[in-house]
Length: 585
Image (tube, rainbow, N blue to C red; front, side, top):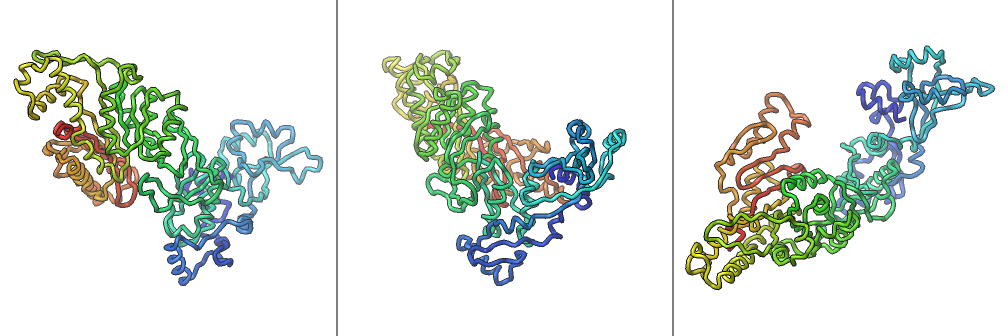
């Protein structure tokens, strides 16, 4: 009954003193059917030999499978004692709705809060069931209320079964059920999972695989919003990078329709990658662009559009590309169903590395009547200095590039080498044409050499906002968690053939603890954690997040911790402005 469990959650002492169900460690484990052997595992006490066989079977795609049968469900049947009050039948409705009494009444989807009074022959009175076992557990305010109403307390018995464990406290009830089903030796019951629309997405450890169908069925039974339960299989699609999955329970329906970040998404979850846990980061990155309305964003690994739709919804212009044709189809659909964002989103298909240069060329050459031009605010020219001629033609270039394929994003960065050569040549030729082959003396008499082109380019970049080089936002993983910054900077620099940490002597700020340290001390955060543990004992969960959520700022790049994806694997975002020496060869 939900109220009893609410009490137990808020008061840890109540877990042992007020719990009307047997505690998990005191109950007999339930019987499960082993489909692979058509036998019964009494109490799930598997012998050592069976455990060895189980390990072998786990390695062979977990052929040992337990399922949830009606006979197993029947083992949840039990009777509990609850406190009740005897009330006149005509007054029962007003009693239940009174603001003092309402929170105390038994509230469960599968049990009644009002029962017939066995001592009332003419049905003059009924029993109102409360969510407590004893009168002493009632708050004083309620006791005074009942005393003023001259009601009589009594005890009653309530039968509960497997279906009872479906209520508002979903995760708690799920944990309660699974703790009664799974073997005692299994630790960390898997009651946590991702929900994508109507799909529950699990990532079960090997030791839970024999029970995966049982776990899936329980999750399906205990949450009415879930219609499909799947488990991630280790296999990753080598090209499109989405996870293979196994259906554990429910419908074989992977067509998702969900709202997140103010946007509606429709996609086939079995054919694309989508992670609801990154929603906060999706919002955070797009919010960081608010200082410049109508920014032009190129998302090279757009997926179904978590960054794209948020950005377009806030007035930015986006070129979205992906290699997965299913992502492309979903992107086009999602742009249409979200306030007709098609005028702000260009959807293209292609490899991220190839799309870097193609996106730059496409933006530069867009027709002046294209919606991007009509939406984009006119840029203020800052290049009227002597000796410099401003070409009147308006061209667009990206303000931001996004690479969110953490496993391989850094590998694509070499696509930025020479990515603005096209722009350099266009600028150079435009200025030569304007002056009929006689460029301003500021640029020198001979502009045929690359060095002179570079000089022209640098002046244009410095003086004209039109040619401002973009910020690159690259999400990546690192397994060197103790030296994440050095690892990421080295890998990025190697890919760009340019060291982005050039100003490595600059001081940086650890925003969470207000300390300053240098690049040579990138492990200081980890050392601070160890020092805290040495002085005060283990760091609690909040302190752990304090040390993990590090955001390091420096002149050449910004490094931000996103989340821990595995015990020795962290996700970061590194952001930096594309260096001139990388953009132009």
